[in-house]
Amino acid sequence: MSQHVNVTTQGLSLEMKRKLKGHIEEIKLGLANLYRNIDRENDCLLCEFESLNSAFREAHTMAATYYLRTYLLPFTDNHLAITLAVQHLSERRHGALMVVERNDRIDDIVHSGIPVGATLTHSLLESIFYPGGPLHDGAVLIKSNLIVSASNVLPVSTTFAGESKLGTRHRAAIGLSEHSDALVLVVSEETGNASFALGGKLYPFSAQQFAP
Image 1 (cartoon, rainbow, N blue to C red):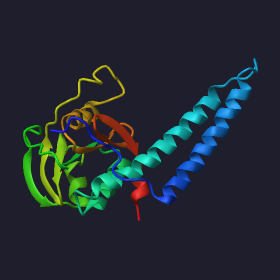
Image 2 (cartoon, one colour):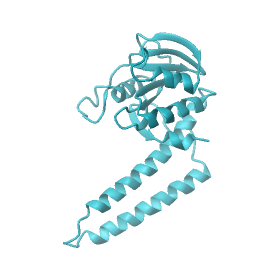
Image 3 (cartoon, rainbow, N blue to C red):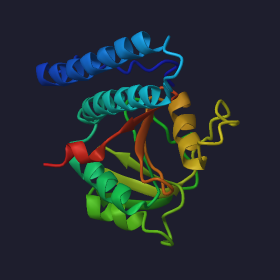
Image 4 (cartoon, helix red, strand yellow):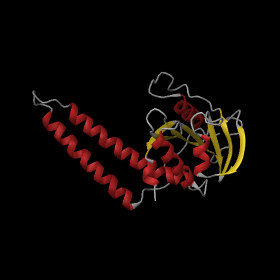
């Protein structure tokens, strides 16, 4: 299994570079204003810090969304089915956990799945994760353009055991990515936020940016 996953598979496009540079310029201006205002005794800087945090999060999410496409493309021809399902599940706040096998074989790590053996479609993914359905607990395993199984159990990361903001799905996503190069997508049922785990780290992304 991979001990280290390189998460920079290819360079950014010119358009993405332009967009990110715009965000970085805004952040630079915000930092300059914060630096100038920090000595003003009557100023509350919390709003400026929050504005900078929001700008960083937006830039981070934009870059992660771009890279997610490059991570999926070599391993499935139908990556849009995955991202469209994530978009719909996110809008409805239906929790989900999807594993895309890449170079490492993960059959010995992913356990107790119920065989599906069906062509990958967004509608099937959405029906699997419908709340209360027989297969909605656990993870879906995707290999190429096939949904292999559902209700799979993943190894849960112990690295973030004390992190109260991370639920079981997110710790399971990180756990599998710590033991393989699999890409694991998560939708939070509490917030509807989408993220993916790769190389033991979690990256927020916007499924809406994949919409045609």
